[in-house]
Length: 338
Image (cartoon, rainbow, N blue to C red):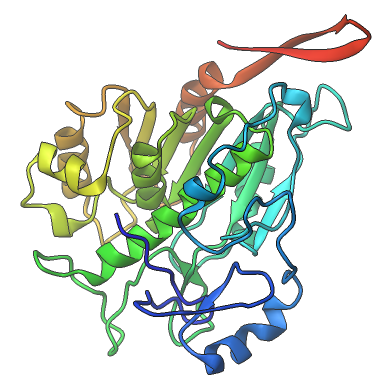
């Protein structure tokens, strides 16, 4: 996929973009969009540092971190609340850390649904309160028009307020999804450079965030711990007439062994249950570790069954710190995957 940045103010995917000259991390349609977002952006705008190798903006982060070896021990990993491609983020420490001054070995990245934001969706991480699991909630780059209706991950509405209908030849949502996935790949590259092992990193998304998380996990160059896609489907309707192998090639999927937990509720009228089941069934032969659950609930994680099955999926995949041992005067954390 060729990366095309999205405007940090209005979310429009850009063929030509203006880049913030200070932080090199935000892109804009024009100076007016930059001016409109400055009040929010100035709180996180800072020059690139050695911690963010090469500085730079959205996308191509895999090239910028090339040659930067990740720390070898879990003790070297760090936390942060602002990233190159996601200046708006919220980090929630694990409720039980092996050591209070050191992050837990697992990281759950939350991707909110259309019309939500990272702060509201972070409440899900607080409610889950998983021991040994840090939580990072990030804001989608798409601003829902007219600008005060929250955020999303790719364009959703026509100029008249109607939903964009997925059909062959429709490219707006595909281009937006490409840009969002590229941002997430950049975030994962950045986390690798901060000491996080990808086998301990999980994506959880709802609605638009679910489809984006699934696509990003399947197309990332490293195998993640797993992806939980809740009520968002498995791929855009624009690909309905595309065969499975052609779909995987078009989306750049390469992680057939990625553990996937896909669920669907009755509430999302934009994606009927029948379509969600059809998509999951189509994907199953390619995604060898895909599990699909359907629920009659209308709200996310509102029933005991939803919560239990999510935790049953997640628990065996989490990286577990076994113990600490002293070696040559240094403390090394020993970790394994269950």
